[in-house]
Length: 519
Image 1: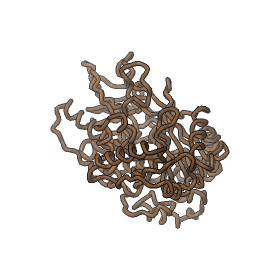
Image 2: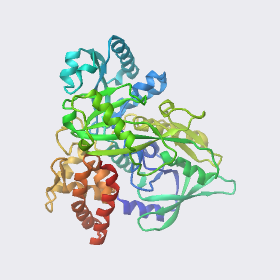
Image 3: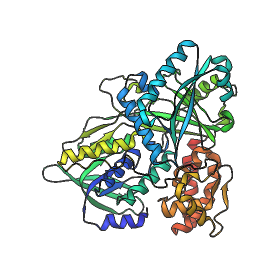
Image 4: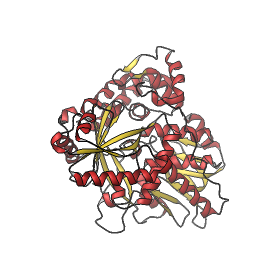
């Protein structure tokens, strides 16, 4: 993943790519993997950093969607639990099985959740992560020691997956690049090229790093821009109908002391109708999520006061140690690119999370909806659709059992570098040079070598790329990550050949963006 080399090829090459993908979030990355695995030539363009928007702000769950079962969407749940199992098999270094406990309120709840979750397990077939079962009140209190005993009658245990979203993105991109894909960040599409019949033949591209503009030709242009999908549709056909109904999800990061055990908690019924999760992650606890319909899209959405209050109040009702604002290490907001409903006034929790693919008159393929769990399947469906539209010979999917870059079984989650998988040894070798084994954060286990690694092999171009997405410091402890920024900028400047003015601006920009993550 050498940006300079890939950019040079994209600019000088007069070739026509089979797929030009606009968008470097979960959806675009899944398509790049699928298309390159089938042997197609692929160019992927992301206007900011990979997963800068929604795809790095997920609840970190690889899940079938328990509540979609309650809504009767069995097909969606079946697809998701199968994909969940495949993701855990293909990327064991950045995914794991996670036990969840639903605190129950009386016999009706106990029967309802035990039966419902047993059905949930059965849908996964051989890819099930474990059997659901009822546990007594005594065992529930033993396993989640800070749950309020007055609020529960017993508990139901079930299993879902957990992962690191932006690490999954980087490793999947590395896999796609290994298969021949050309992927690049900070490269925006500001126009579409069309032939005399109005069919799209390529894209006009702007390199955000040096300001240069050029064109890339493609047989199939794909709009995989998530909440910004309508912007590309307007480029294609001014006045096009809206396809996206964005919904904001907010999460709070707390210290591990709020959930000391290994189990996560699922609270299935909250005041706004959403499920609330308390999930252990990177030795912290994520609490979320909200569901707030929004009118406008934003690259850096900001949590609303009522969302923060709602999460704190709901968690406080269930825990004996109620979290306060001062306990929040970071607050982050992401926008879900839900497919717009056909009828006005639909609640966002009722809008389907299944993905939808639209073919425009120009031949543009737009994919909306979906979630990280099904990103591989979204790629498969999109490439199938392109083959059908172009009457290309169908090539069966090659990604169901494709190992993701970094693949390593039985990682030690107590090792702060575990998420590098098979690359960890190389990171450690790098740490032996130039004093790069020095710590940047003892609480988060980050060393200087990781900055160098991110610049050289993971296309990190600025301080935010590193602290927010190559490692997760911005989400794990926003204030501490700001303190790390000057040293990170200094190391990056040496690697990238930048001066002190660049360093100062980087630190200032990072402080500004991260102020939204601090309460």
